[in-house]
Image 1 (cartoon, helix red, strand yellow):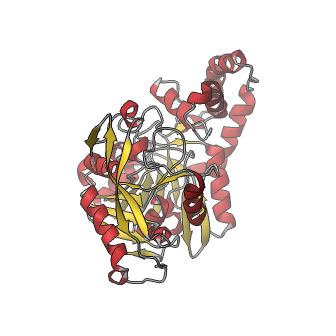
Image 2 (cartoon, rainbow, N blue to C red; image 1 turned 135 degrees about the vertical axis):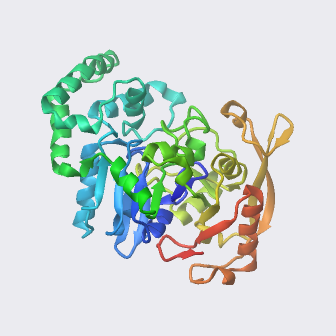
Image 3 (cartoon, rainbow, N blue to C red; image 1 turned 120 degrees about the vertical axis):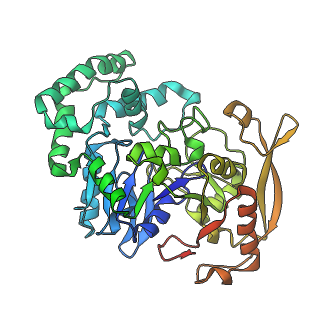
Amino acid sequence: MTAVVGAQWGDEGKGKITDYLAQHADLVIRFQGGNNAGHTVVNEHGTFKLHLVPSGIFNPNALCVLGPGTVVDLAGLVEELTMLEGSGISTANVRVSDRAHLVLPYHVALDRLDERERGRQRLGTTGRGVGPAYSDKVGRHGIQLCEVRDERRFRERVAHELLTKNAILERFGDAPLDATEVADVVLEAAARLGDRIVDTLPLVEDAVARNARVLLEGQLGAMRDLDWGIYPYVTSSNPLAGGAAVGAGIPPRHITRVIGVVKAYSTAVGEGPFPTELSGPEADRLRERAQEYGATTGRPRRVGWFDAVAPRYAHRLNAFTEIAVTKLDMLGDYERIPFCTAYEIDGRVTTDMPPTAMLERATPRYEHLEGWGCAITAVTDRALLPLQAKAYLRRIEETVGAPVGMVGIGPERTATLL
């Protein structure tokens, strides 16, 4: 079984890697997160921005599961399925765990309220309600998908939760939500999903028993992990390989391959420390060349040079069996490429990842690698990459501590070198 994990701040290109691997998978499971992040997939069907649906959807022979570790906006999921079906993609192979938690309209309202009231200390969330949904889950106020099967009880739960939620909204000057309207939106979406809401554990058990090819798809990256990331500028779940076991229902010993996905440079969406961040014309040049805009929000991504400290830290937490490097082609115009190998904090140089309060004071320590000064998108064999590009990949291997198994030289599925 293979887990695909982001090794930076998210947006590393996990959708492309998952789509590539899913062509030979039997089961693809999204194990955490919600529709607060997007995976962009480019293949023979077109370009798609997926927020909830697993990136294995383009393999009709692979069962695609949203695991119990996810939080699901049912109306958003139906909209995404409708978009795919409108492009001729069958979604009959999608299943949603009945133990996953619902993202309800009041979660979205509370998310946006919280960001607004934080002011200058905002977290940079997408406002999709994912954080409040996980908060309700941990606080034991959450509503699981299985509860939509009992309409009367579901409506009572929504009405009860809105007593508190509406009091908060009104306290800060926002309009209260109507319990009937909230429940109607969810129940209508649930009806459209029908029998795709299931107990997913038997599906996973069967896959394990027959030694099926299982692919576990994470969202965001290690630096946004709730426990190990740049808290509080983190997501509300665990996108590490350890989280994959829990969020998918996979016994940990069955995960034998862990692929850490990195960009050939660094990007981030949201707030928090980002040591190699570029600004001004230099940032604009890289952002525009690589079209670094959020797949969910369209916000310009923060961009910076490759920061080896972060993926090395991610490797220590995940034990990557290999690394997948994406967007190597975006560096083809640079004569010399800064490459961060360590931080200096309060006069001390370290290759360890400090907690957020110290990371905010970190200055990157760079070495400069020779660029290759040419396009590489036409390369069909990794051995034919320019010597400087191969040297860049070797430096990633040396500083992170894991071998580079896959290299992306374009957005398309086929633009992948093994």
